[in-house]
Length: 217
Image (cartoon, rainbow, N blue to C red; front, side):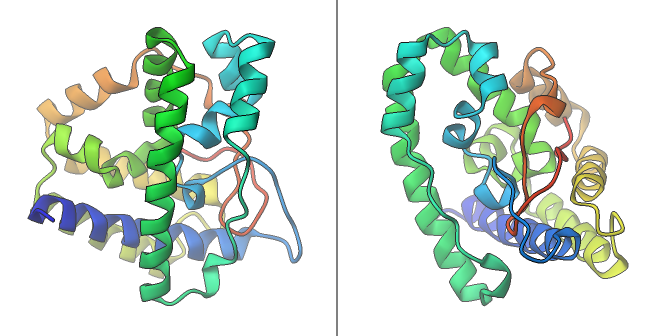
């Protein structure tokens, strides 16, 4: 694995740990929600299952049925109690499943629909866009920038971040990421986002359960 991918993987682990801590404190005992959150890696599959995204893409009833059959929802397990090693293994397994799901989606959506889905995903990821290997590579994220983001995440986690609110935490992390990126990287990221999508229409949850949208654009 190239050094760039190693640093991005390290950032992914730090970001996931931050969100796991915040979501755990915000989640009511026994509460559950539907949808996805950073714990679900904001995959294309988790997005394309949502009604708001399907409406944006103009999917036909027949195509929705095919997607439902090809992309069944999977349980994520309780990642809050994982060790760092277990969490890393889970992330690698999740990444492999997402790769397979992406291939299925590419075979079902047309070029325009697939491009728009990718734009919505970048918007929904917020700061998490920098933990995506392909996006980080396209933005030429440096080791130094990864280090700064990791430090910022640790500070937020230790300081309470969004006061136990996953949405506020994600918004703060997105703002911090924008401070760390240079002008050229920000311009490339804006281009990847495409036209604005109303993220409030998305059903999101943290790794432990329910919650309203929280990813920054």
